Image 1: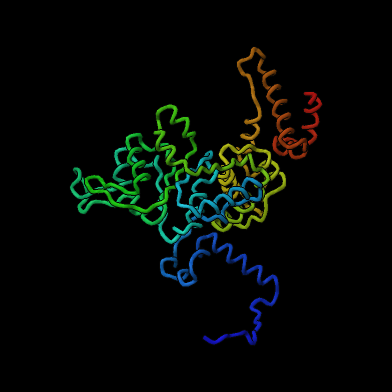
Image 2: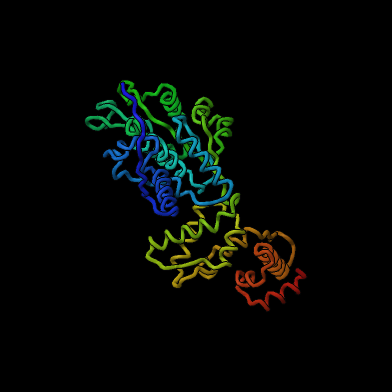
Length: 372
């Protein structure tokens, strides 16, 4: 064979400026995270029909926040997506478990296939087995002609998401365990069939506590809990609240054909100092309510309705069983409400007066009266 050597080269600039290259790379990164492309694919496979028009419900770019907890969560999702192991997502109501499940699927090599969602609490107990595993024709009275394919078979090659898995009936749990162990599913009245799925489960309960109470099988718990992903509560990442609030404000503007440009500093301060037991879902609900009330460009305390009183009530404890006369109970409640509102607003008296719907002068008088 003859030798070859480089005798010249052509330098062709696709990007004339550094900012163009950055924008291109940002687009590639975003499309990858949304599941439109997978950087582990060949370029040819990126454009196959199986990828075109695939609906993306949620992706990792929908996880809003810059707190260390959220940055760590995104990194974990990136690592988890490369695996086929079962994932158990835990966290309180409203933390975004469904969003995280979709993000894992859409970053994985299974993203070309379906992600089938099952809310275990929403299926009547008598139908759980047939919904999950399907059935053959004639397998029981009332069975449809031709039988029915179960959710697990529909997810073959993709991912199945078992939301509220703690609600799965106890007698069905051994059958789920077999699917996880043997990688096969058995329709009612039929033969076992091999299946290739990844299972992602989610719960807002303490599954181990349910195991101790004999309400959840221990062997299934260990099969589901191969990789545990615990989602932070909103109160644990309060620095993300302004980002979340403004992000959802923009989404609601589009959905509701509104033009609300901003959230007042008083409202944002109230948001940041609230504990949010319902987490991100509760924040979204409060914003949607306020957007319905707001007719201007800025969301203010006047648009929050009963939320303001709820914030104060959560911070005020009253003993109406005491022997104090009614006037003393009223004064005690008033003083406590003022004290807690000042604490909530970090002694911002102007904001406290707005929340309490009294003038600043009246607030000062009451502070002196109650020696606060």
